[in-house]
Amino acid sequence: MSRTSIITPTPGALRDALVPTFALAAAIVVASSAFVCAPDARAAEPEWPGQHIYRLPPIVAAENASSDTTDPAAGIGADAPADAEDDGAATPDEELATPPPSGPPTDIVIEELWPLESVVYPGGFTNWSLWHGSVELGLSGTSGNSETFNVRLGAKAKRDTPRAVHTYELTYLDKSADSRQTAHSALIDGRSEWPFPDTPWSFFIHGLGEYDEFKAFDFRASGDTGLGYQFIKNDVTDLKGRFGGSASHEFGGPDDDVVPELVFGVEWKHCFSPRQNVSVQVDYFPNVTAFADFRMNGRASWEVVVAPEWGLSLKTSVIDRYDSTPGDAKSNDLDYSLLLLWSF
Image 1 (cartoon, rainbow, N blue to C red):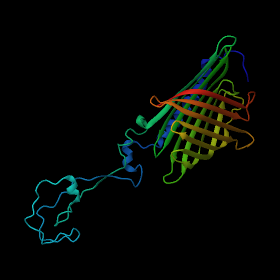
Image 2 (cartoon, one colour):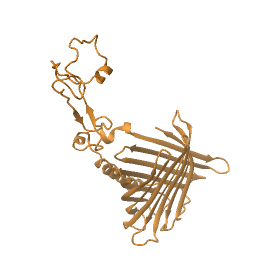
Image 3 (cartoon, rainbow, N blue to C red):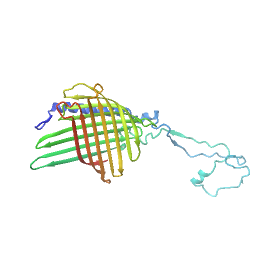
Image 4 (tube, rainbow, N blue to C red):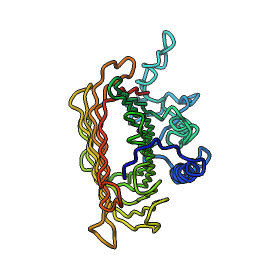
């Protein structure tokens, strides 16, 4: 539904749009944090079973070893010269190479520690050293016979460990032409994945909040959960698929019902070189009660590193959102931008 005047949201409209947004973001964070062990709880369950860290104190040799006792394993007999003496202190390498003395067995104390306890994950979920992310900005405009101004802002944060992967992303878009707003939207996306050990399977929870001034609704919140499968994962290519159940609800629109949906998705990333990579992500949400009604969200990007010492890249990005039941608006929204990306 097109509009020909500048849109000035009222405080009530902003409140109705932002409250569900922050509620969705808080729910994603709480759900993600629930699966992360607190530092004091890690002693009850190892981070990676089967991997252990040992602390071995120095071996204390038995004193007053009998010189006439034969040690078959070491090949030291009773006829060893009794007057053999060391010329000086042995080096550490010589001590390791020297067999244990004959006589009573030497005591060895081994203290087993839980893997990576307070080493890799101090502070748990809030250990910011485990996070990495990026900020992106795109601007364009004209002045003269026509006045246009377009801005796109984005931010992404990711925490990737062998136990869980948490990804949060924000995209904001504002466009105007001749002092008339032509696009104004915001996307808040959060995803958490927990891989199953020694299998390509994983469990995921995902939430998406959509705010759009030019849709038939003011705000749409959706959430989905299910299983993921890692088809390919190496230093060059990453390909995974997922499926599960979903639900969505529109605020301020003609349809006030919660829509039950399924979700089928695929995500692919490929590095052509250390300086170039492409990524594609598509999620399909058919209505459980009417498969002809569906939503589809897609993203594609191409990143080229231009200043690795500064973490700067150029990014060509395409975001597509399709809704088969758009009301009075158009079904498809396509945004493409050239952005400057700063990674940290």
